[in-house]
Structure formats: C-alpha cells, structure tokens
Image (cartoon, rainbow, N blue to C red):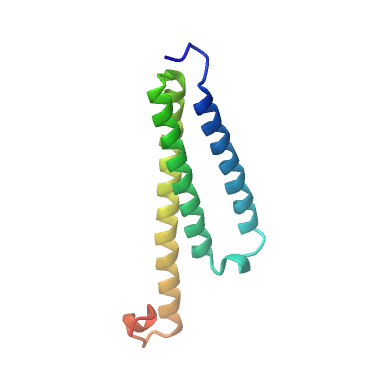
Length: 124
C-alpha cells in the first residue's frame, strides 16, 4: 500500500506519459486553427481530435486502474473527476462531428437539389 501523499513510481511514469500526450494534443489542436488545408475539412480535423481524445481517455483510465491497484486513493479520486470531464469533451466532439456532417449534407443538397440522396453521399 502506498503511503499517504506518495505516488508509486509506476503511477509517476504513467502521469508523465499522460502529460506528454496532452502536450501532443495541444500541439495538434494549434495546427488545426491556422489552416484547414492540412486537415482536408473541418470534419476531418474534428475526427482527428476525437481520436486523440479517445486515446487520452484510454491513458487516463489505465492510470486510474494502476492507481487503484496501488491503493492511491487521492489519485483515483482526482482521475475520476478528470475522466468525467474527458467524457464530456469526447461527447462534445462527437456531437460536433454529427452536426457538421449534417450541415455539409444540407449544403450539398442546396447546390444540386435534383440529386438523389445516394448521389449526394457518394453512393451509387
């Protein structure tokens, strides 16, 4: 059992990994703002962001599981709150993707209202 206020070495390594990944995500988000050309479309950028957030959620869940095994109660509590926030962020991105895909579909239908829905989506 870990002494109060101490974090196991395994948890410290995992925390450093999560922090490093957070920096990677921040860098990716910054590169999404200046130009969409690198990401093809706004939806592609959102999908990339969602995949990164899902990976972060996995890392955080692994860290929480490790902390639980090591009886690091304060860290487990903290990560529980962090994961709740992370789930809200992921849900928000999923909602944004659905919304923007819907908007793109509407815009395509306005361009050529005589096209069948299958033609609009690229399915023949």
